[in-house]
Image 1 (cartoon, rainbow, N blue to C red):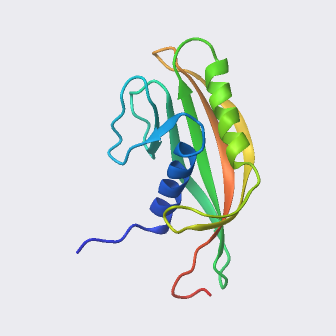
Image 2 (tube, rainbow, N blue to C red; image 1 turned 60 degrees about the vertical axis):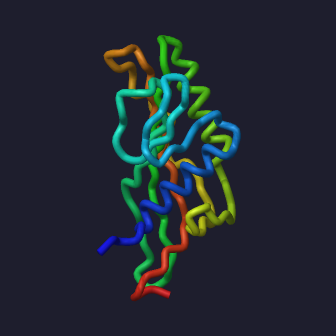
Length: 151
């Protein structure tokens, strides 16, 4: 038996497709394989390559017990090559400009989002052993998440 993709998978995949389709120069590839020159979009774990990467992870939610309203927290981590921190800051800024106060959108995966807004960040995560800078920003995604016991 194969399970259908769950809400979190659909939310993150839909956000990845949205980011890739809207002028960030990022590439969404379901296999997670990217060339060294691409800006990759990945879900969950942070790969060693490519150098320039955007990672999306669900880390918390606040769900109404009876209604199908959920506020899901999504961490957006960015990493960029080289010693110039402005590269990663520019990538984080571009994501903010695309997502901040995004209203009433249905993602490609069918997840309905009422609003997206940043709740914290950007926070510098410093440089890794390869001199790549990283940042983290956290967004709240108000989403419609019906289930068997919620209307």
